[in-house]
Length: 237
Ligand code: 1GP
Image 1 (cartoon, rainbow, N blue to C red):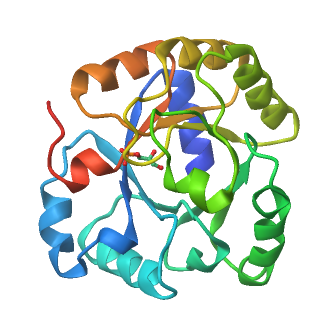
Image 2: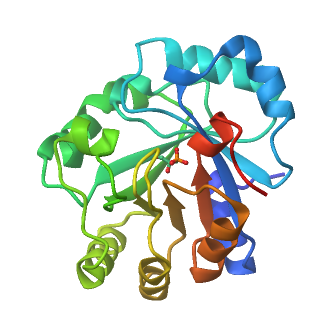
Image 3: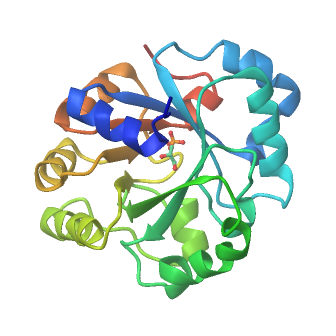
């Protein structure tokens, strides 16, 4: 029997209107010895795991993924801050282009550097347009990528950037205010981007409670990503 790919599943779930909750695990902050406890305590609503961070020591991502695999059957997707985080032990990879920025390093250079790791790999590669939006504080992505986030009030430019991603063949668009953001992406932005796109829409950064999460889903996000609030155990249901 043929098994659907991660992306086929995501597209199908979008069509069915089934929202997906993803937990972002930052290997830098993850204690592998507590993997079992952390994963056991996750809400049953969680359907995907992203692993990645802006600054991660060379082998830590691989060790983190291995520890998660031992304790969870959820699909693990690498969400890399850098090509060195790519590991074969995961199931998929968000092949990111930072479309909100104009730094060639994160538009194409990192992608070229990753090829030697990917060309003989079984990882499912998912082309993803990544759009950084101002979340009210300086994000690690902004600092590391040396790019500016898009202002929340420039909705037309954000919609056009997302559509430019779709027209260039991205399979996902990820709207991001950055880990630990004060503000999540506004509901108006999510709604307008969702109306314009036909591909699945991911929203992450600064989501702190279930009221915000429900509103984000209702506005049109197909998947929401939560890192900090689950990592610190502060998410309010
Ligand atoms: C960051 O979107 C993710 O890439 C998650 O952000 O840590 O603020 O939940 P938080």
